[in-house]
Length: 464
Image (cartoon, rainbow, N blue to C red; front, side, top):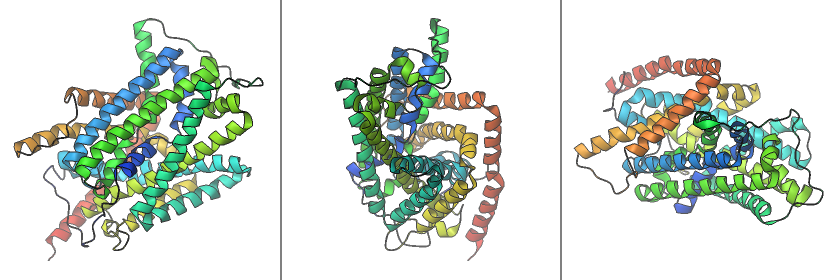
């Protein structure tokens, strides 16, 4: 493998460094906003269809919460050990070398991050167009505007970008709280009608332990995807006040808030719609609010979904750009992307190029298909990053370095998380091997690109 664990980042040509301006509240909102997107409004129906009973439905979300909490503890220790901008990229580079780290950044820039920006922007834009009574074709111009405006806000400064995300995250949590309170406290309206699926949904509860394990395994795939996203907060470590202490705190607090939110939301869906109604619903949040608050409730939760998707979009834009900046600072990407603006102290070039790629994917309409191709890769990097804890712990111990933050139950809990990530990868590959093959090919395209940048770096190091 070209590049090894001893590789160190190249020094930036600029003396400008990230400004530590984000406290515990902003960090926690980054975690919550980076996890809660559209998944909790879409995945619960799929989970019910796969397990067929209310106890197993709640069990699947509970198990997903446990995996997410374990992952939060693992990333908390990683963040305490290496409180550097770039997060996952830095951990992979220091544990396994520059190649896997580059492939992560390459996938994030080419598809995972930018594709998610395009997809989430379109989702939020479509809901916003519906909310404003605009025609469906208004969705794309709105999505373009969202990407441009949120990129500009993040260029203006990390505090501005984070504040925007904070406001949107608080609004989304408020909308979800309204949904939960309405479903768990109010009585259904007399004229309430449960959703009816265009194609009837037949629920078949599993029989026996083997069927139950298989059903729960299938349900965990959408559950764990809905819980994904907390790891991105590590990318902004250098912009947190006292990151070695703050990052672990906000990771655990944020993941716990999301776990409680997801469990309460699913309880609300089941009470409002029942098992069959939830399985049949294509918009469980809107259908639930319609039952308790009528059209006004549907409008309110649609607004909540808009703020949820736009808030998630803002967080992805903010956090992903830090990975490209770290990669460029290592000499493995365009030099301009390594620079921070002297006034705003933000990676302006990385943010702008990220926006350009996202807009190209949006306008080409390929983002959904490309994301389907690489959805398995996201969890490959999740699992690989968790595995870096074994290497970094051993290396730090050999140097006599010790930290107060440690993942509880390591190595057993870390192995469990890696196994869960592996299961999601296997499940994604088995469910659509063609997509996985295409995704692997897109990742492989990064190999000659990596070789090019390594040659460029070697020439730069040899030059006087």
